[in-house]
Image (cartoon, rainbow, N blue to C red; front, side):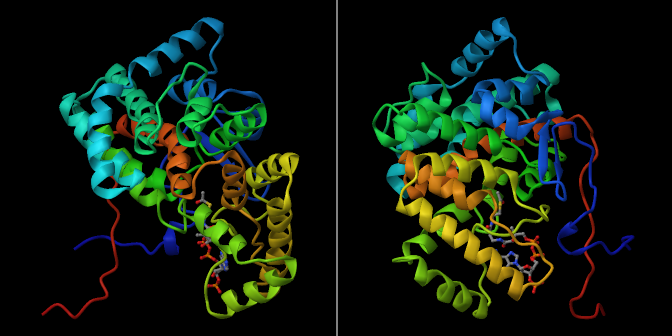
Length: 365
Ligand code: ACO
């Protein structure tokens, strides 16, 4: 007989582990990476510098910066990956399938061992490798060339759009990817940690986390948020559509958050960046946000539902020329850095995460 103690639905508010990676303050609307204000990092730091903060616990100095860039560059296995990605992409057309398969196949070919069997240096190597291959897989999957001479952000944009990105595009996508590297115990990160708690391989942690990320209630929302914008010829179309969606019991993609009870700070910065570029699409998104927040307050009073990161992430990625099918995979470039850090942190504690369920099935005879 299992010992059971009821907990809130969805484990909301339940503390299940200690972490030194990120902290989210839902009432204040702030979040931090290893003590650094994440929004400030998104405005000022490079993707690679924040990546090193996740891997080694501190931002790099000049000397470390180039050796970390060499490390992540060396760990990309480009030729080997291309063969796997081309095969899976031809068979499925799905960047997510290419990522999942590549983690599994390439880690097996490299003889990567379960996290349980690796020392701290081996776990660090595994974590760097697992995140470093993500942009390469997506580049091949999109039919582009992975070239990272000027960093992951510019290389990713070049690979998926076929042109050199401008200054605004680099800055906007850097901000987006830094803002989304980690965010407390979100569903995909928790999935990665559950898998890591078994001592499984880093590839297993990443593939499981990606599966969780793709759901529309999590990282699968951006393309759906754009689908909503597509329906609006002009601002007058917005309110009737929102009311009809809510009356039908459907959720507005890009709104609401499990932790924030105030504006999502990621949405604020991305709205600002989208506004720098401007255009009718941005005007429509702002009108959609204003109307949705007002109607949601009327329909779900007291729930404090605001735009989350996904609405303006979708707008910014569209402005950068990222195709819709690559929006959630692009999110995974950033979040894989967080998943890998969490897997390593979890693997240091050899305690399996294994909660209980209340049995509500047919009586046991
Ligand atoms: N549209 C309409 N109603 C909503 C929305 C929404 N976007 N979000 C929450 N609600 C409603 C719920 O239906 C619920 O109503 P009820 O109490 O009458 O049942 C109430 O608000 C509370 O919702 P919860 O389910 O408790 O919200 P929770 O905090 O568990 O979920 C979530 C958070 C999943 C993000 C939710 O807000 C949602 O589904 N949003 C839409 C999908 C989305 O944008 N996902 C991206 C999230 S950001 C990210 O993962 C990176």
